[in-house]
Image 1: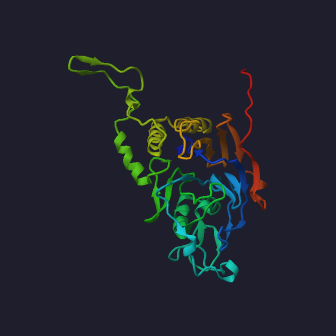
Image 2: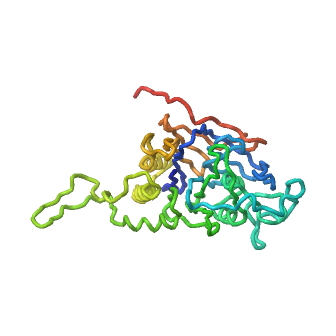
Image 3: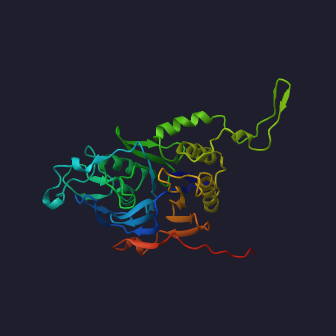
Length: 362
């Protein structure tokens, strides 16, 4: 469970926000990945050079840092969200023919498609599609793409494979939302039908069912309206609204992915356009608060609590994060800055788990 949104200000800056709803114990932190950083894919078959630095929230694990969201120096923001029952990837055991040279790919042609230049990410490979574990697709995008268009091409130029991650012990079913400074956003889904890159006209993503279904489902709520309903007469009964908000009574109120998708899309589309950064941050958090999951409201089949661990909003123009957690509602900030962005290794900015401080008014 998670919800992601985009929001654009009157000044033209694009913000990207998300809730992280999770049932597994995690200790997320903010990290800066430097530009020109080299890393091996989880399979050990390809070495990748990411030209762009990025800042993101992730969890350290035996597979390195598992990133959930982030923004890079080129203004591309992205988030990974759960997609159970629909996500499908290539199987590791099906891979043959690229494991020679001690498990390393020999130099190849990069990741262009049909002769076109690919995203800026560079590969040491044999010319076939590089295989990337789904859990490492997000840092791959952030490190190698300078626009949504590049991200769309990158999704078609690699093969996503399923590998169990150390946090959940399962192959995480994921899909992704990507946005850039222009305000354009796309959704990337890998299903049994293949990889699809879809324009996101509402700037919202939750979980299952698939994205086309979620967009179609919005048609069930065309009667939702921020304008108050007028009185009606049924036979001899005069019916008057109880109070303001009558036009929103058709909106779903639960925490299912379709319900959260509808609420987020409605709120985002009817909210006044933020005039500046300050208003945009507030608007992002207000929308996401309406889809946040309190502890105890949702439990998994095993009895674990699935709730909103953190809520984050980032500015694609400045590389700045605004973050609050379930335990600490105070908004804290982190920014993609030098020298970390030009270092030689990932740098941890700080853990999200911090005690709140209360200040007197005035």
